[in-house]
Length: 367
Image (cartoon, rainbow, N blue to C red; front, side, top):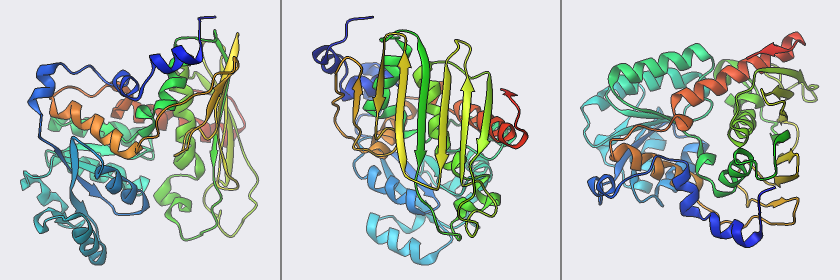
C-alpha cells in the first residue's frame, strides 16, 4: 500500500487543490481575461433548491444571481426585493424566450421538476445562453441526448449541477479510489435517504419526477460509485422495497436497492429511500477501507480510513463553489470537463433507467 499518513493527507489535499483537480487548469492569461467580471446567472424555478442556490451565489466570486424565471408573481416580487434583481431580468414561463435579447444574463440554471428540464434547457440554448441543469438531467436518455444536441447546435455549453464534484471530502474519496491508495477496490456501499410524507410534493408524482427516491437521491449514489472507482458499470440487479405509506407512494417507489457490477469485479450496492434517514459511503479495498458518514448530502462530513486517519477539510458552500468553478471555465472560454457535462448527466440517467428495468423484471440488465 502507498504511504498514507494524516500529515501527508492534510498536506497533499487542501480546498484549493481539490477544486483545481476537478477542472481544467486555467493559465494566468485565462484568469486575466475575466478578472473583475462575473457571470450572470438566471434561475428558472424558485422552489426550495433554488433558495439554496441563491444563498450560495451570494458567496460566489465569479458569478452572481442576475435574473429569475417564475410563474408566481408574489415570488417574483419577494426575490426582486431580497436579491435586488432588476425588472428587466425577471421573466415568467410565457415570456421566457425573450431572454435571448437580454445581454445581462449569460447562463440559465434550470431548477424545475425533472420532467421540465428538457424543455427549458432547449429553450435556453435556443436563446443563446449557456445552461446548467440540476440533477437528474432529465427523465430519459433520449431526452438528455436532445438537450445535448440543442446546446451543440446553438454553440452554448451544458453543465450539470453536480455540487459534490467540488466538495473536498468527496474529492478525497475519489482520489483514494482512483489512485488505489488502499489497493484494488472490491466493494462500495453508498446510500442516501430521508423521510417523506407529503402526498402533494412533486417528487412523488411520476409525471413530474420520473420516479421516486432513485431519481432524486439515488443519482448521488450512482455518481459516487462512478467517480470513486473511475469505472463505468456493465450490468445491474435491483429490488424495490416495500411500500409502507400507501397514501403517499401511489405512483413511485418508496425505496429501491441495487447492485452495480464493474469491469474490475467491483460491486457497488446502494439504496435510496423516502422511508428513513441514511447518508453514508463505504469502500473496501484489498488493503483497507475508507468511509464518509455523512457522505453525499450537506454534512458536516466526517470520514476515516482503516489506518486510523481522520479526514479534515474545510466546510464549503457547495452551491457557491460549484457555480464559481463552472463560471471560471465559461468566462475563460474553455470547454467544460466531461465529468460535469451533459454527457455525464446522460450516463447517470442511462444507468438509472437500467436500475428501474432490473427492479421491474427481476433480471440482470446490461448497461
